[in-house]
Length: 116
Image 1: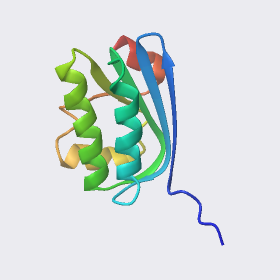
Image 2: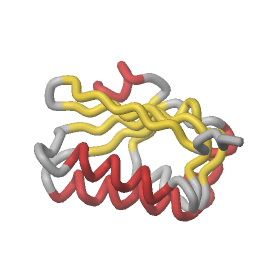
Image 3: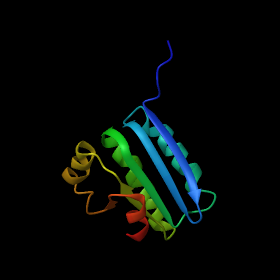
Image 4: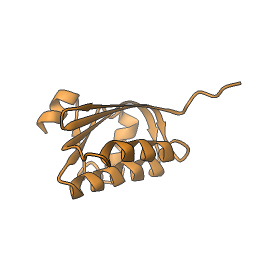
């Protein structure tokens, strides 16, 4: 019996930006794969903006948050930024409880993220 992946990751370059769409759970099991994929996206040519569409994410744990924070720090070092989009209430509460809603720009849509 094949187990469905806990996290689907789609990523596209759009000019100087990278749009990452996640669907599923960002947790201890999926974080290493997410970290690897994000590193592949930002290493060859650092994007000016990484837009992370989390509208399909229904759960994130501390390892998932750590992976996203690591991406933001990497982006800041190269003059870029990360904007989170479409946070579901449960996921948004994790960012609010940890006060990371002050560290990240959070937008309602990809278009809004580009203007943030």
